[in-house]
Image (tube, rainbow, N blue to C red; front, side, top):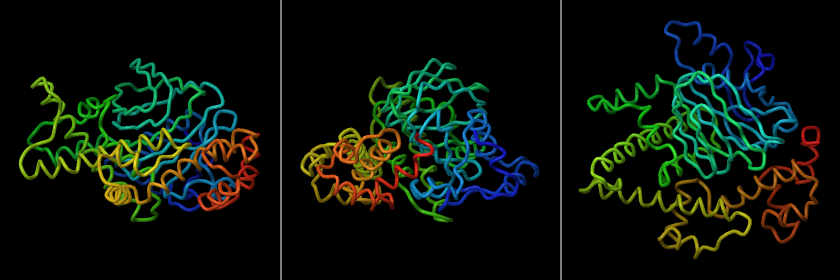
Length: 378
């Protein structure tokens, strides 16, 4: 994945505002007793090295244009793809966000150490040749591939946008030992059971929260680990529900009693927010009025606003604006469209309003953004 020359020993690797691991820390883990698990060292870096990806240096002009997250950003060579791959890795787990547009169809061949993962594709078109799986977004992947190599074809006509959690074996083996010691649960079977599942909004909401988070420092590490634990718990419980449903020939449902009622209410809220997010992602250009969203969520407008803000840390309007600006950023980077045309393409009636909101979201004008990317995009 990453160029080793771009990551010399001892250098701190992180984006302009975030934090990363030091090479000394990884080296200590690699050569210390017991080989402590390190998803970045053992899983991500070997693959990125195979693919020719490189970290975005803090002093690059384009670094300031990236979303402000703790962690490290990577890019493909400019003749392969625009956009970025971001990751935050902490020992036995990593979370990542991909937002890329390929310049041509791309054959991804890389090393594939043992791990499990879950990945939500908002947008993708790809084929994976180890298992014969096809991806077309939206798609929820429970990633369990028992192969030492990864081989997939990604199609250029559809942007690749996803959020992912990757877990080293030590993480999920410890988690199941601590939480489900007497049940003999198999983590790989649990993750495999949700692969391609049509309805799992609770998990999609948790992944979207990871994508939306902008914290730094120790709070980021605690937040991401908490979200990873939440996601694993959701996956394990869903796999148990599916197993019971298969045994009973019925749909997986909520439990009974007071605890079951509370869990059912929470799950119902997550499903409602999942429907709202899916609608907003699909209708970012035209937007949506409050009445339509409330009807989709099956709740009042006031409650929807409160639950959305609590789940995602932003208003519905703020989320929609973020989606539009992400689309605008791609158009500015990948085309010569006039600014007025870009504004209209992402849902704004006037270039002035678009420019005002773009500067607020990205910290620079659309023209300055395009100019900063010119050496890469042209």
